[in-house]
Image 1 (cartoon, helix red, strand yellow):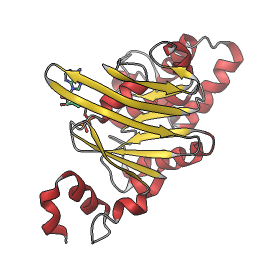
Image 2 (spheres, rainbow, N blue to C red):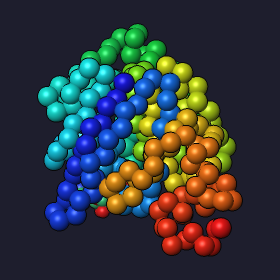
Image 3 (cartoon, rainbow, N blue to C red):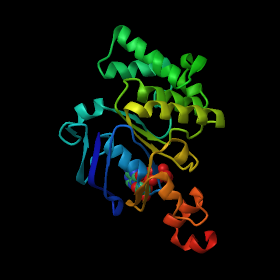
Image 4 (cartoon, rainbow, N blue to C red):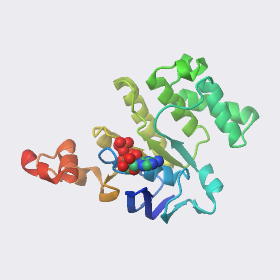
Amino acid sequence: MLSVDAVVKTFGRRRAVDRVSFDLATGEVLGFLGPNGAGKTTVMRMIAGRLEPDAGRVRVGEFDMLTQRRNGQRLIGYLPEGAPAYRTMTPREFVSFCLQARGWSGSKLRKARELALERARLGDAGNQQIGTLSKGYKRRAALAAAIAHDPPLLVLDEPTDGLDPNQKHEVRALIREMAADKAIIVSTHILEEVPAVCSRVIVIAKGEILVDEDPDEFSSHARTGRLDDAFRMLTRPQAEEAVS
Ligand SMILES: Nc1ncnc2c1ncn2[C@@H]1O[C@H](COP(=O)(O)OP(=O)(O)OP(=O)(O)O)[C@@H](O)[C@H]1O
């Protein structure tokens, strides 16, 4: 479904992403982990066609994201960091707006919109201006917009950021539910999400992939078998003594 081949991105003199490569198939949920500034968002933006790589290429389905970006973007649901920019729209209007931008209309649009609002558990907040919503509801509005066109590839940048524990639980359940017929990338700093939703883990640091493996292999990097220790072992090798 997705092929990322040796993508590179440099900002000024800083190499944010350095020859990152991986493939992702339908049915896989990839946990994309790494310390702050590791390059996760930059990779996700390149996959979503929001940022051009300096080198390398991204293919989504049969489409090259450099030369057939519009076609590729039809297959992608992208949840960027932060809140939707359209503060005066309600989530219902925002999801309609996003679907219209994709050429949807009429009862097909309404049906898709209502399903997305329901899946993202917007409830009554669906009719409240986005600018007045809590952080968690803003996040859910953005999530509804990302999934509304039922794309086969979801690229979710910290989907549970700002959600309370119940909401986190619901979003993880939704990701698991959607995983059957989609390929999904989820970036997160919440390591408990890895066994809860992911079938695979990539850890990136300083723009490079450190590991690409299943969650059990990942946790085995620490002798304690704990995910947070494994993460520290991989991203701060000097922490080895502290967790052994
Ligand atoms: N538009 C930009 N202009 C300049 N530098 C940028 C830009 N976007 C990202 N960077 C830099 O690229 C590096 C990678 O950033 P990125 O946001 O991809 O990391 P991240 O892994 O998503 O971090 P976090 O976990 O904090 O969200 C950082 O050093 C960041 O400052």
